[in-house]
Image (cartoon, rainbow, N blue to C red):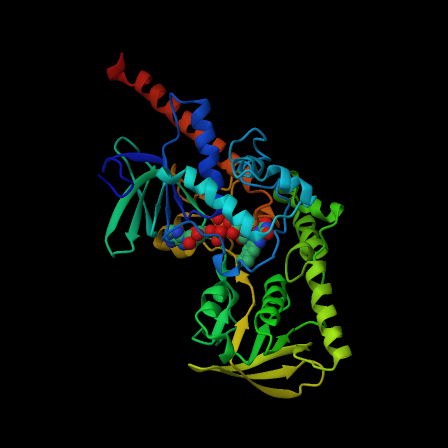
Length: 450
Ligand SMILES: Cc1cc2nc3c(=O)[nH]c(=O)nc-3n(C[C@H](O)[C@H](O)[C@H](O)COP(=O)(O)OP(=O)(O)OC[C@H]3O[C@@H](n4cnc5c(N)ncnc54)[C@H](O)[C@@H]3O)c2cc1C
C-alpha cells in the first residue's frame, strides 16, 4: 500500500498539499461532487505536515474574533445546503440557539477553530497528517506526448518518504512568517506565528518587560494579551506608524471580498487592479479592528489617570538592531521623528511583522521553469487558479493562496474559500471529462480500432 493507504500504482485525480482551511474546503467541494456523481468521483488525497489539524494555533488568543462573517465558512457561499456549514456545526454542537442569541456575525477564533476541526475530522480518511510534501516532478504517462502526471514526494515525521502520482496538485501551504532582515527567532525573540507556544513555555514572573513590534491586528492583539496576562509587567508596543489604523469592514469596502470581485480583478486593467489595492488595502493589511484599538487606548488612558503606567506606545519607531539571548533581548530603536536612538532591554520581544504570500516556487523547485511568469516575474494564472504552463503540460498545478496579483485581495483569506474551492473542483472535473473524451476519440479514430 502507498502512503495514502491506497494501491501503490493508483493515479489520483488530485493531491492536495497542506490541509488548512483552503484545501479543507476543496476536500469538501470534492466530497459533495462525489455525492452527486458517485459513479465517477474525483479521487484525491491531502497531505498536511502538522501532526493534527491546526489553524494558526499559536494565535488562538482568548476572546479574539474572526474577521469574516460566520457565513463565509468552508461551504455556504458555494452550497448553502452543505452539511459542512458553520450552521451545521453549531447544530451538531447543540449551540445553534445560543449562537443566535449572541446576535453577532463574528465568532471567536477558538470557536471557528473548533468548527474547522469538526469538518476536518469528518474527512479524516482523505488526509495524512505528519506528512510534508518535499517535491513535485512532472512525468509523462504511457500513451501521452506531454507530461500529464505529477509525482509528489512525501516525507513523514519519522523520516520515511513515499511517492504518490496524481493528475493535479492543489498547493495551499499558507502564508510565510516574515521577520525583519537580520532578525532570527530564538528563545526570547518570537514571531507572532509562534506566540502562544513560546509564551506558554515561560514562567510569567520572568517576563517583567516585554515588547511587541508591529501595527497590525496580531500586534495589537498580542499587546492586549500580554497586558492582561502579565499584570506585573511593562508592555511596550513599537509601532512604525503614528498609531494603529482601523480595519475598514464597512459594507461598500467589504465588497472587495465578494466572489464577483475576483472576476473584476482578474479581467480588470492594471489601473483597476492598482486601485483595488490603493483604496482598499486598509480592509485587511496592517490594520486593526476598531474594538481592539479602542480597548488599548482606554487601558492606556486609565493608567494615565491612575498614575501607574505600564503600557507604553512608541510610535513612529523602528527596530534597527536586535540581539537575543537565552533570557531576553536587547533592542536598538530609532525614532522616525528625529532619528533619536533608544536602547531597550526586554525579557521577550515579539515581532508581529506579518507574512509573505505563498510562493509555490519553493515547492516546485526545478519544475517551476515549466510555468509562465509575467513581466514583473510573477506566476501567470488561469482564471481557474491553475498555473499557466510554458511547455504544454496537461497535468494541473492549482494554487490556493499566492494569487493576489492575479485574483485580488481575498487570495489568502477565508472570504472566498468556499467559492474558490468549488471553482477548482469544477475545473478538475471538466478537464478530466475533456481528456477522457479526447482519449476515447483518438482510440476510435486510430486505425487499429477500425
Ligand atoms: C492569526 C491569523 C488570523 C487570521 N484570521 C483571518 C480571518 O479572520 N479571516 C480571514 O479571512 N483570514 C484570516 N487570516 C488569513 C489566513 O491566511 C487564512 O485564515 C487561512 O489560514 C488560509 O488558509 P490556507 O489553508 O490557505 O492556509 P493555512 O491556514 O496557512 O494552511 C496551510 C497548511 O499547509 C501546511 N503545509 C505547509 N507546507 C506544507 C508542505 N510542504 N506539506 C504539507 N503541508 C504543508 C501547513 O502546516 C498548514 O496547515 C488569518 C491569518 C492569521 C495569521
